[in-house]
Each structure stands twice: as C-alpha cells, then as structure tokens.
Length: 213
Image: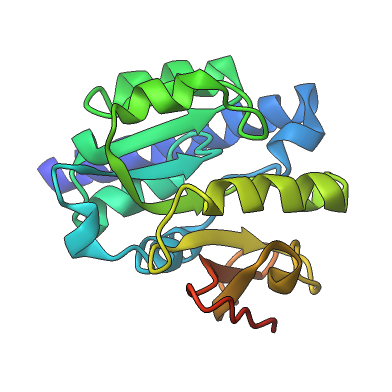
C-alpha cells in the first residue's frame, strides 16, 4: 500500500511539475527554454559528473543554474550531495517558491543567472564552488552573452572543478577555446525528448593549454 501511495504521489508531482514548467514556458519561452522538465536519465547523467568527495565537503557548495522545478536538484541529492551544500539560482519566482518548499535546506536565490550580482556571493558565504550544474537554455542567447556567462562562472572555479551543461543543439553552445577553457567530456543521452548532450567545461590549466572539441 505504501509503495502504491508513493508511486501515486510521484506521478502527481510529475504531472504538476510538467504543468508548472509549461506555464513558465508560455510566459517567458526564452527564459524557460524547454516545455518539459529534463528526463531522469539526463538529470542523473549531469549529477554523475559532480565530484562527490569535493561536493560533500562542508566548506564547499554545488551551484545549480536554472533548476526549474528541481528535476536535476533531486538527481544531485540522489547522487549523495547534502541539501545544505546546494545553492540554486532560478529566475522564475513560481519555481523559486516551489524549490523553497521542496528543498528547505538548500539556498534558493531568485535572480538572473546572466547577472547574479551580490546575491550569489552572499549565498555562497565564502564557500568554494565544487561544481556548477547548468540547465540554462544557452542557445536562446547571443554568442557573446553565452561566452560572457560561461567564462564568468568558470572564473569562480578552480581548474579541476566542472561546469556541467546540457544542450539539445548539435553545435557547441560555447567554444571552449574562445573563453580560455577546455571541454573535458561530451555524453549523449538518447532517452530524453529531444535527445541531449551533457558537456563538461573546465578552466584551462595554469600553463594556458585549452582544447576545443
């Protein structure tokens, strides 16, 4: 009986999330990007790229950009990252309300990921960022804005910390060599609508050797 009730609650949550996501897309399609939350397979693939030992350090944080209804957030928690180590930066106020209700232990910032200002610094509270996990619809922005955003976030990371981004596009949303970075991994997730790729960017090493893909 318990498992049946749990499955029913999960299904209701999924349908509710889809409705909330669609409503957000209808209001601001360029900010939301997709009409449905990411699949569990895509979310798990992104979470798996986060280095667990570093992310679980009490002096570290994992920054999630554009969490929406929290599909990737749940995958990060399932990966083993403490909720208190999550900082969630979301533009839509309706999504922020939902995230605060579901993830009371995380820090939820309502703001623009392309211009986070001092709110992000305050939320981090001096903690280093172990990884950045992004669901931002980068391809809806001009190339110069994409490069500025990704380059700015990479400057907050050390050379080994990943910036994890998914994309539906066949071309790279940002060419690593244009921002002094390297592209360390590309993984296809076919069981997603549409199929997606998970990209891992890192800062170039101190010698300045950046590689493209």
